[in-house]
Image (cartoon, rainbow, N blue to C red; front, side):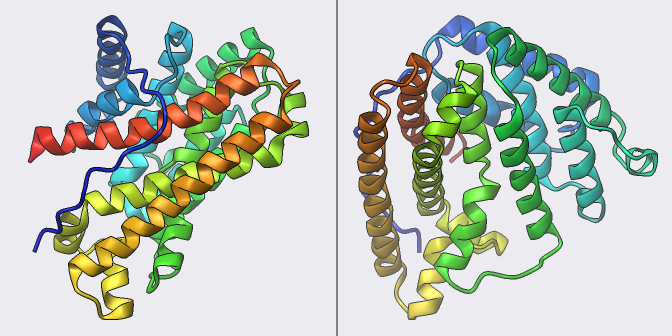
Amino acid sequence: MQVTMNPLTYPFPATPLGAAAVRFVRDELAAFEASHALLARRPGLLAVEAVFLTHCSPPDPASDALAVVTRILYLVLYFNDRVRREYLGVEASVVWAGVCGRPVATEAESQCRPGLMAASCEAGAALREALARRGAELTSFTHLFRVNLAAFVWVAERHTTPVTVSEHIEVRQETISAIAYLRLWGLLGGLQANDELRYGLHLQRCERLSALVQALANDLRSVERDRQEGQPNAVLLEESDRQAQSDQAALRIAARHAHALAELVDALAVARRAGAAASPAYHAYLTFIEICTRGNNTAMTELVNRYS
């Protein structure tokens, strides 16, 4: 039985890309795929990415920043698809090195899908050039991106199978890639190392709460699909753990989503007060966290309506 939930709402602004920017994203994706063909097995992921970027980008992003994020997210979608589980760990290390400008072992590169190393190096070069123009550092994204890829490896190699909602969410917050994605846009928006150092724990709390809200929202939308595909889902785990009916389990997860959203609203307010003297980029980043949290839900709504 498909559980019917009330629409999820957020007290955050919406700043969808304009028509010209959406065309730019689609053209960039088409060109990148034509060069590297990493999503040939599931070309629909290109449309998914375009919709997500439409609703989860900052207002009026610079074209170089939008091009960089388009490429990085394309690589992340390759791992979401997990087309070669047996090589995923090696390929993750190659992609991380290529994006972050680190050396790659010849043996590892030889085991990668053709085009993956080239795509990673191309995306990484564009990223480093864009950050250099803004005087921003790559350090924090380097770490968060590695954790994101490590989560894909964890799932692919089945280090553990979640049996509770908490176990599932711990990994799900990473595999949805929200934390690294948020910080990437923050750095491209000019977030400075001094702000990251002085207010880093505020940023981390806001990012992780946003990821939690997004993960729970996504699970609430995909209960029956995940049931059919045998994928972990917070609602399904709540059903199993508590031996509850689907509607009861969904209501509990919806309540958990609402609680996480309230915590995020509070954390953002605290971060703004604490960083009253911080740079404009810091405050713009906090607003972007709001935009992306709401935008994820809007994008999922659009995709569900399009493909249902």
